Amino acid sequence: MLSYNVAALLRSVPGTSRTYPVAVESLSIADDLKLAAPLEGEVRLSRTGRSILAHGKLHTAVAESCSRCLTPVAAPISVEIDEEALPLLDIDTGQPLDTSGEPDALRLDEHHELDLAAAIRDAISLAEPIAPLCRPDCRGLCLVCGADQNDEPGHEHPDDEIDPRLAGLAALRDQLSQ
Ligand SMILES: [Zn+2]
Ligand SMILES: [Zn+2]
Image 1 (cartoon, rainbow, N blue to C red):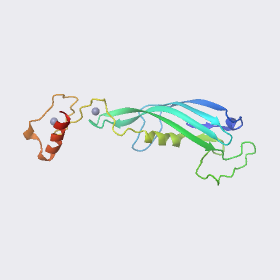
Image 2 (spheres, rainbow, N blue to C red; image 1 turned 180 degrees about the vertical axis):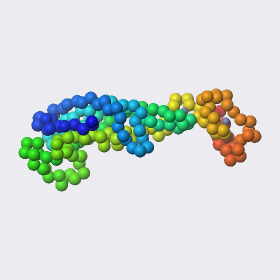
Image 3 (cartoon, helix red, strand yellow; image 1 turned 45 degrees about the vertical axis):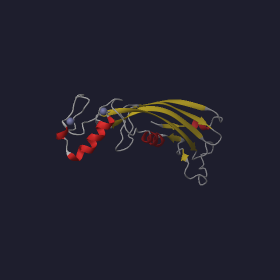
Image 4 (cartoon, rainbow, N blue to C red; image 1 turned 60 degrees about the vertical axis):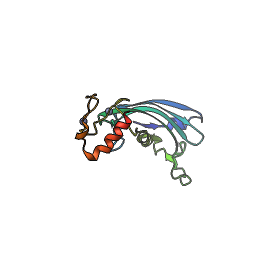
């Protein structure tokens, strides 16, 4: 799952590529970031003279809360990944290759497996929307009482009910809604 055995690809001529469909039911991303839909798309792996290039186009949705009314929403996201992975072992002899020149490079493992899960997790984390909305015109919560103004479109309070500490916010709200 999100890991590809590229032994055959390593034995093919540079320029050879293979495309794999991706359909993963769930993938844990981070403690505070969960997927709300399967991860789908495709990954293309290409042999270069020295490495395997991975290009992935994937889409899913992440579980968020509306930034105005706090309703849970599934925010769709699309991510692309581009990775270059170097072999760990010589594909013909099975001998370890010298990795000291590029210690930070992404490496295949000793079974010539390319694991893209970490790269995909990172890409999804970076694509997390900053201010997701349940719908473009969400009215948000009332600043005074916290009522969901989507449920009560005409909702308002006489001015004397407003807590003085919130008066500044109420004034700002009135400005913004003009
Ligand atoms: Zn909302
Ligand atoms: Zn209210």
